[in-house]
Length: 364
Image 1 (tube, rainbow, N blue to C red):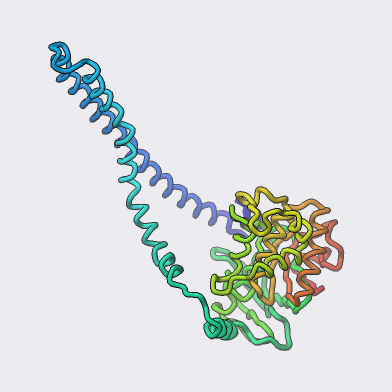
Image 2: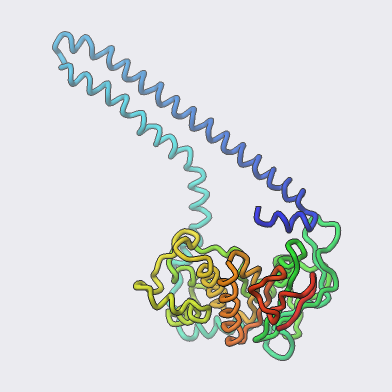
């Protein structure tokens, strides 16, 4: 598992292993039941149709010998019975899978119906949406765009907090680096800022205003260490950044690709935004995948961007280029950026805060 080192360092590895074992046992029981049912269905189909073929042969033999029915016609009836085995097995499998299919349809049907009923938004409706968003987002003003104040947090099952008395602030147009080796709590800090992990003590603030759990979630954009790239197009992946009612324009999508350093590469693509990226971004290089993921996060149009180990899977040259482009993209847009990074990294200059000690942070 990707987070094995973090789980071990935080003392929750045994809890995670036990939970995984329970899920694995439950899945194994379900697969075993399914295999037994499938095997029984196949055996029943084979026995039934071979029995029917044998019965037809017994009936057809004297008729063929007497000349009442031709031998070829008798053989066709017998072969048709054996040929029905495969078709019957397919029908039995369809019946066995029907309950799961019905549950899936029941889950997605409301969403499909709701999307089909969404009308084109008028100017008044768009204004109402913007007004609603402004209610959820803290008003801009003095103070950090996002701040952890005297915070403490721990994951369920842990005896001691991952961190205590931690204060981290991120201001517009500046970078804040949270550094430390694997398992030191960098991802936990980001999870707290995202609202994924409730604080045990302290507050999350934006421009001096304390944020409750509902307002924290969705306030900051997040680009995880291994952001998933879907088997679609550049456009399809970028459109995931926003709700359908606020979908970005093609000009905005191209602009954000240029902000993250993909402009020259984009200009060489014959199909532009409709270029396919492959399963998991397989048609892209590692640096291009990470830049596309960051571009998608920037399209969220949040005042704060959280990056978890943005250069973890890149070589030194690609990592240095990515950090430089991200620096330009976020500072130019006035985005407050918080990133977790394991020190030291040769590709990361001192101004990015790579040489700070465990548990410390620096605004850059």
